[in-house]
Image (cartoon, protein in one colour):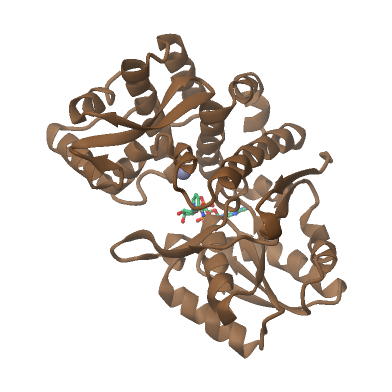
Length: 364
Ligand SMILES: NC(=O)c1ccc[n+]([C@@H]2O[C@H](COP(=O)([O-])OP(=O)(O)OC[C@H]3O[C@@H](n4cnc5c(N)ncnc54)[C@H](O)[C@@H]3O)[C@@H](O)[C@H]2O)c1
Ligand SMILES: [Zn+2]
């Protein structure tokens, strides 16, 4: 089924660009790049899983439109987001003689987008790049907002830049091959947008969840577009995270700590922040009087999505979790800073909470 193409503008002055969302968009990649008047040589950066399925089509559409693409395939998975891979990419770009006017296409999930974006931001002090996100998480979150970067042994995303793409193409067809678990994890970020910004979106998700779980393009198109609009709006007001952008971290203080203590890999990011958002909602009930009924609606939507909503921890693990949260950036004077909800659709950031309340909110 064909879905109408939605176009969401990201307004950042001379660095403004569009996010296009629809079906059959990969086939239009070359045409879209030609409209942007990008230089002739380009490199498609992708990973083994995505490359196998979609690199050929990306390559052909670019070649048909007069570009000379080369292909860089990195291993699938978080380990590719490293300085070692960055270096490999630089060497290949140089070997393919990419120049100032050349550009990079990031074809893949958040890993490829963050990596290729960082390479684009730094190679020859910055060349253009286009994002073609192929996971739900990348379409609604990582491809929007211009954060690019890689991991160090000491932690995730410790090296990076703010660097905006020239275009984002979200082809909903690519989601058809995404593993079920990855897809549902992406829905955790979708639900987050409802909670932090848009009660109507939240109610639509409650209503349309069965269609979303079936990945119906018509429903997905509107929902993905709304999420991009919200993120673009927030980023447009606070590009470099000095204030408002913090609301995008709803559920993430708990979520990051859960990922951290359970060893990266046990929970997908979306699963950890599903648990985190439910805990943050309980905390919101205590601190900001979020009505219990709304806490229940939130927990129930995550459950219906097939995401975990709680975590059982023995006492030593619980202590580790709290310690991990205190290590997170958001601590001042022994109190941890949280994004909390007043109502579904309305949150506040910078709410200071004592550790005992933080711990209590872990239990239903
Ligand atoms: N820049 C930002 O603002 C931002 C925001 C959120 C997350 N991130 C980053 O995003 C990364 C996570 O992104 P992700 O969840 O997309 O993970 P990912 O890129 O690792 O993709 C998940 C898995 O799905 C596979 N895959 C991707 N598209 C597919 C498709 N269409 N069909 C079949 N398989 C496919 C990948 O090969 C991989 O195995 C993390 O590194 C995180 O730090 C960045
Ligand atoms: Zn997240």
